[in-house]
Image (cartoon, rainbow, N blue to C red):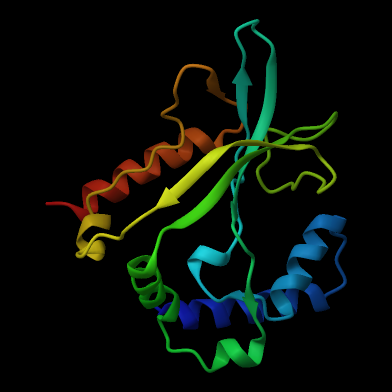
Length: 191
């Protein structure tokens, strides 16, 4: 399995080729690809934004429904230049986080980006406009990492379709596909 740095470099070169080809892409996709090509490697997992690609439906007590995609926003967003990233150790992101947590908690703001009229909830590959309203849902605070993180990760199962009351899957078929694939992955990781 390639190291974190190798994966980042491979993705960087694939995106550069993609952007240099004559293609028709949405404005938000072009902004994302351009950002990646220009060397925006985070200085830490704690200083990066995370975007959910699948849409979910929030249902309030009145039965009103609204499609959303999740966003995890850090306290601060910090990226390295391509030159700075190239100087880092291969797994610097994995190694940096436990050290950071030993100095204090890492906090993210959990947000929901609201779908606008005509935004696709069925196709996760179609980004929604950055101009869509985003609302705050809460805070996530990480205070420590597991001392045996790699072993613990082998026992964890994330199921995006396992939801609480008031949240439903959208018409995105990938939610169910991910549930199935992740269950198979867990069964292959654990004896």
